[in-house]
Amino acid sequence: MGHKKKPLINIPPEQGKHFSVPVRPATPLVQQRPSFVLECCHKRDFCFIQCDTAQKVGFADKLHELSQLTWNQIINANRQGIGQERIPELDRKKPSSVPKEAKIIGLKYHGNRRMAGFRDDNGTFHILWFNHNDKLYKH
Image (tube, rainbow, N blue to C red; front, side):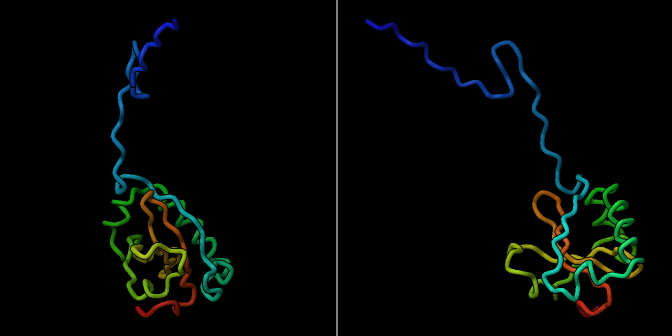
């Protein structure tokens, strides 16, 4: 006769027979710092390539500045400063690769120029367009 196997005990991965690891709650999205993905060029007229040198330098400076803040600080900042601005007009122009529920927002990147894109559930801002010539949408 074969011997009986001991039943397996379901032990969560954060604890063992002689130890346990405290589980930290997930940090809310608004308390996280943003990350950025450059996905522009869906419309070549509003691609990063069309920006002049000063705008490209301003973009790099702005990414550095924004990456030091949390989403909550960006959302609550004055929209004339670094704050975000909803751009509902661009919701109708978004590429098919963008989730339907995504809301298009603009963030200033150089002077009054805005980059437009959407924030995903992980806190990443996907940049779709650069309003380098103020013709992307009506203000």
